[in-house]
Amino acid sequence: MFDTMTLTKITAAACGALLVLVLGSWVGKKIYTPGHHGDDHHQAYKIDTGASEEATGAVEEGPSLAELLASADIGKGERVFKKCQACHALDDGVNGTGPHLYAVVDRAVSSVDGFGYSGALVKVADVWSAENLDGFLKKPKAYAPGTKMGFAGLSKPADRANLIAYLATIGG
Image: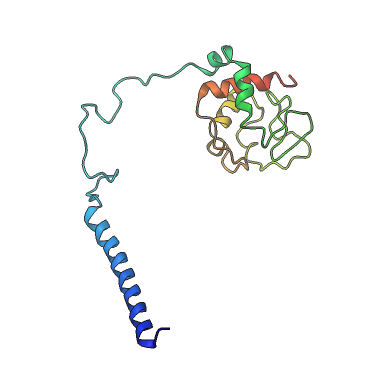
C-alpha cells in the first residue's frame, strides 16, 4: 500500500486543491460581481429604454371579475379543478387534506364540520363570495397569511373565474 509519507502528500495535495478552489471562487465573485454603488437593484449598468420608471399613463386592466364570471366556461373550470382535487373533495361531508368544496360558493368561511381550520381565513372573510374566492385562489398565502393551504395559487384571472363558476354548480 502507501507509506505514511505518501498518504501525507496525497492529503496535502487534496487540501491544497480545495483551498485553491475556494479562494478562486471567492476572488472570482469579488472581481465579477457588479458594484452596488447605492443602486437598489444591484445592476452593473442600466439600459435606457426611453420610458421613465414611473408609469405616465393608466395601467390597462383586464376584464372585471363580474365580466369573467359572466363569460366563464364551466368545462374549463372542471379541468382547473383537477389541480384542487388532490386535497379537496366535491362530495358533501368528505374532507381530505382540505375541507370539502360542496356548495362552497356563498358558504360561510371555516364552516365545515370536522375540519380543523387554521383560523387565518376567518380574519379575512365571512363568506366565500366570488370576490373572496377569487382573492384567495389568486395567492392563498398572501390573501390569508397563516393559512394552512400550501397551494401557490392560480395566476390567470380566467382560470379563477372558470373554477368559481364550476364550483357554483356543485351543490348550489
